[in-house]
Image (cartoon, rainbow, N blue to C red; front, top):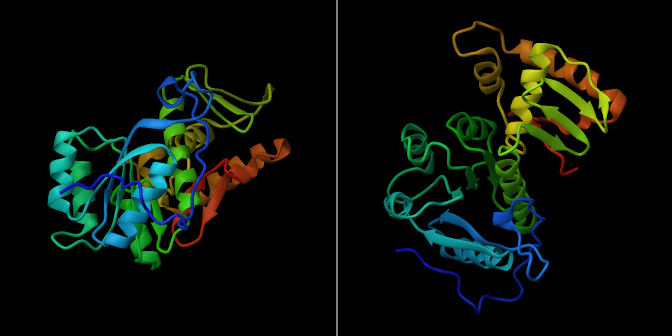
Length: 264
């Protein structure tokens, strides 16, 4: 059912270098290098070649990865193991990856597990559907293994950040308790909505958020606000960050929504 990483994969496959992660779980103080051995990733992919490439790539990045080829096997694997992140294809033999994602988000046991859609479906409607169904990221095939590892590490840093009341990124600091925002010690003046919007972005770093998702999370699902209101507040937030050179942290993802990224 699940296949483990082989040691004799084709050496021509592209390797990746994981970024450092600040929590004890992700660091190895004895040898001084980053290691992800404690991080468990599940690959749900029915193409053997892509599955093998992913396994090899993630092994080189020191992750503990397992691969399955359909949704039934994925559900069984999740029931038996606690995975830190899931790479999910859309087109699978027994059920669509989107349907599996919907079931995960409706199940309290798996609702908080980060999921990256990894699929050949590249239309705008597909990307929006994946994100609105609960995907934390949407990556189109063919993909860069190095970029994939960078996005995984970014998501893991987010998990680490959530352990603290203060969110930080590229010199930008947001204190969730005191409602203060600063850049390298200098205060950034934000409205209450601007603060909530920035906090939601920083708590969902590298995740593409649609306007509908932002409305529900920042304004509330029971409040009627037009989607263009989001664009207005994004512009105001960027304007507040611009004097500090941090307005580029909030990126526009054409055809999908917005993303907070400190990856450059």
